[in-house]
Image (cartoon, rainbow, N blue to C red; front, side, top):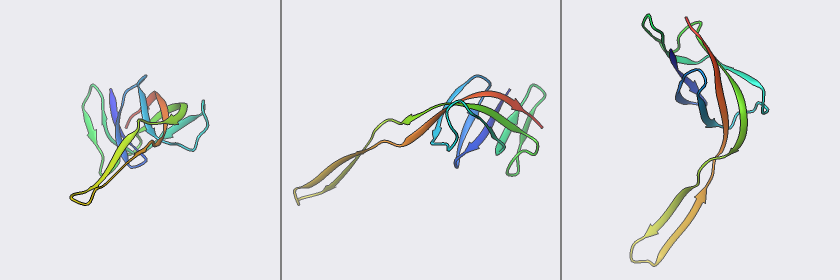
Amino acid sequence: MYAMVEISGRQYKAEEGTLLTVDRLPQDEGSEVTFDRVVLFRTDEGVTVGTPYVKGASVTATVEGHGRGEKVIVRKFKRRKNYHRTIGHRSMVSTVRIKGLAGA
């Protein structure tokens, strides 16, 4: 059983017990959060696809921690002008552990 859930505008595959790295959430570490924007819900009986979301389906998770993601290198370059710049960026992320899925 799994669900495709939308968190901060991005879609993630959520199975019970999995660890997801998502954009920074406002909740504190150790707190429980419920995501109700479920796009797809799959059980042994079949698949339910939302239009746009599945009614009555939700995903419960616990915030494990906050941190920073991997560095993304950004390069600027202009040919023949001896111009080049390199900068890096690290996004703020949260790690959540999926506790349970409530289906439709």
